[in-house]
Length: 266
Image (tube, rainbow, N blue to C red):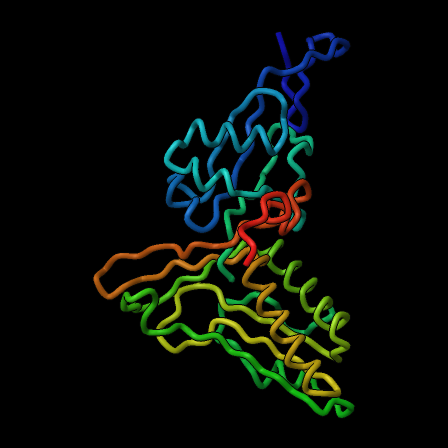
């Protein structure tokens, strides 16, 4: 008779003295963006054999959900607000977030993510600084057409812990890299109609060049790194997730593939 412990991959005999390696573990995979549609649920139980790592979790998910195999090949794993390396040990019963390519697309008093209407006045008041002579505000809205198709609305979903941490990191980077005095980013989640604001980037700096550069940096990094997904709804009744950017992982930093395989030089 064996007694299985839920927090490890070890089983013990009734004597409690002889640890035996379990043949498999089950991980609860949280699915985001298009993965939830392709895998049939927001949370899916994946049982797999050793090695008990994110890399093996992904390959097992591909075997068990072949319709999602291509997207899973470009998917990162996270626990809480931390992206996991491919060889990070996993335990039985772990909850792991599967992060497909993103299309996003705390000393601050307002959250980085909110389902409520964005309040620009509050962000301006939060960043107010009389020593700054430059203020740059970017607002992103849901537009009428995309790639020749008429859009009716956009649904934004996010993996909250990782997205909030990444937004905070980007804010700090923008301030440090461009000598800005403040950078605040806030992103909506949920279903938005045409013309509704999905994101604000607010930057204050002493001079305009720093403010413009910091704002552009924050926006581009948000689009490339933040765990936010866009599901676009069209006038013909169909919908589609927008193709995103693969999230950098500890074993595959951003730009690593480009460095290994440079394209043609002009």
